[in-house]
Length: 139
Image (cartoon, rainbow, N blue to C red; front, side):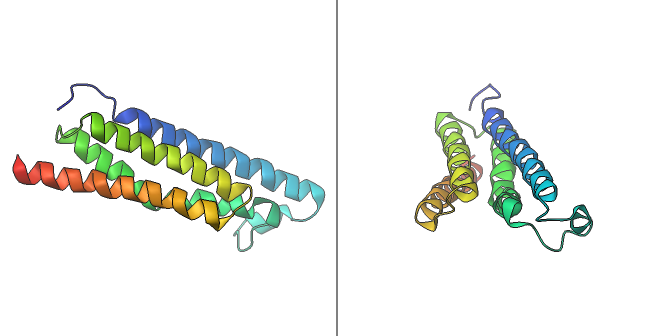
């Protein structure tokens, strides 16, 4: 429906979030080692994450769960030419919700705020896939 690559920008923005989280994880792990609360060796098999980096580590793992469905759906929508202003807005809603979810997760980690942010991204992804199904069924 669109002849642009606008669907890729939310995907790039999400990848940027993942890169930021990897950097933050490294910074927090180095700080844990320097403070003596963790030993560098414990990262060899990473069986236990220090408290200083645990929330970032957990959030980073979250970026390879639901977001994988988002990325696959976004690519399928683009490849089938099913993208339009609504799907692009939904993709941005997903990404903005991931940034907000990550912020809450690695700071206060309050489920009261984190869960609704997750559900916004979840709903956006479900609607993207629903649109893809409708598009394919009616094309």
